Length: 117
Image (tube, rainbow, N blue to C red):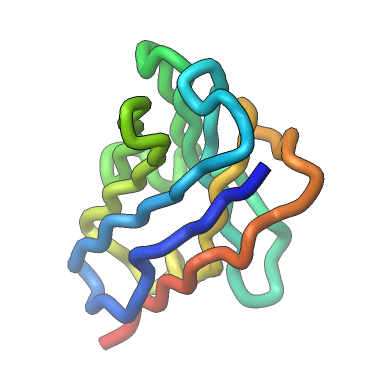
């Protein structure tokens, strides 16, 4: 199982970013997937999840209405569109194989999102 996150960077408050996660080593189209983040001095938290079919989604209250999770099963890629970014969204973002859990044996390197003016 390999999960490679990308797309992070520096954004201003109110700005947008789109994260990607390239997945390999398992049948992506059959797997529920999630995004998690770990901010400075905070525990890792799951912020969004999507079922294998794309029909079910979950969002943490802190990102509901601002973030959108999606997937392209043909490209084995998971996405997280982040709008109306806030400084408290600053974190290292990871993708995970599973519904609000990590079924892979280890986490990827993550992609850093920094929201600052």
